[in-house]
Length: 159
Image 1 (spheres, rainbow, N blue to C red):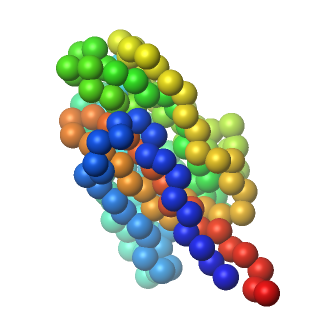
Image 2: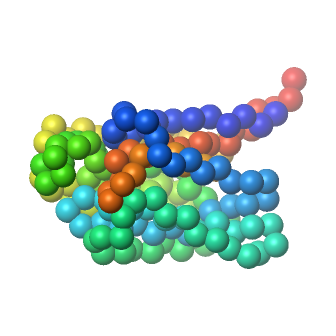
């Protein structure tokens, strides 16, 4: 039996503005993070069953871009980082730092974003899951990444 579990959102608790879930046979083969003082955006490269790819980005186009190419058999397992009120954006709650963890890099890629000028910064991390990949993402974005949450596929033995 397969179950999809939701974790988050981490960051702003205002209504979500994006939601993406992988279709059957798709997998995340890479991602990129736009970052500077805070996290501007996150993007995912999705590989379809036929080998073709498409990219989805959530957030703005500011900051520096760092690409992460996943190797064969590598998949996203969790996210961690910090969020808080960003002084330079009317004290809106935004993601300040972000790490992307995989089954082959449990310590994570990153952190991306400096977390500068955050007021009341708080850390977050999705559960340390080892039995299923991230199969979707949701959250809130404008010019920056306001919040982020994940969908994880978990398989349970049939009774």
